[in-house]
Image (tube, rainbow, N blue to C red; front, side, top):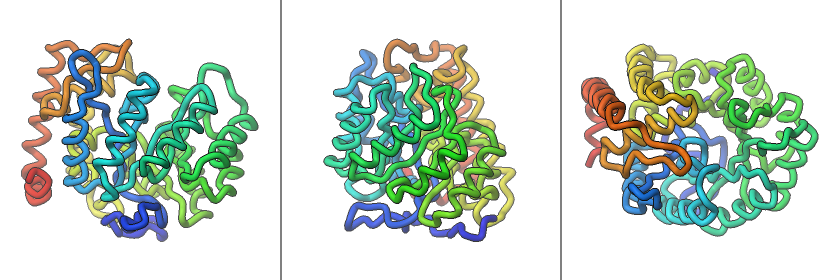
Length: 333
């Protein structure tokens, strides 16, 4: 367990009165799914109920327009509506982070300004894709964003999708900018994550968060302060309990077994990346949070697979009721 990791799990790094991050963000930040109707319009009622469900479940932050939130697939108007509605619904009860990744830096800057106006606490930037980008241009991209935005920035390392890494030397330079307050790593490479941990430890006010949820427990011992776990849309209590157990140096076996069981829903689709989103949205549909539809051009899981998702979700919920009865009862009120 890293010596600089506080066991404060009550969002103490967020000042609810000022609406600003006051220290390292830690715990479980949910990469929120974006509920859609059957005709693929924003399902406002389900979005608002999902925000309430996640806050009641005790999450430490909401991350909108990320990979799980299908940010790159949503039109500009829908992105802004999601930001506006989630910030308004959260109402200062938990930090809201906004993904601003775009192929055009001007669009990222514009969305960051909109997010600030609507009350978000931070932005998140993955490398722009389509055109290959070298590390010097990537440094300049993040530098220009923070120079033109009032919000702090998390770097989002997602090489499977962007085809570009935030290399350690680049991260070292970027962490010299006070407005950059953390790194979210979804590479799945624990050697790289360990290097990020060493870099981020030089800035105690910064956070290192992991994306792949099955690595959450291992990440805490490598300098991680929590996770951005897609499965937390479905069972936030499970991931919070796993994070707390890892931070306390307790046994993780029961929690990790359930995380792996839940992870079966991600392997039903044929395309690995949409399959994760398909699984999350099918699970949320089974819980009453919108349809299983994805933003175009991607399809939902077929009905036969959705029934399998429902069975998996019910199995995990049954085990959670035994493992975390008090926590589940509280969040379901």
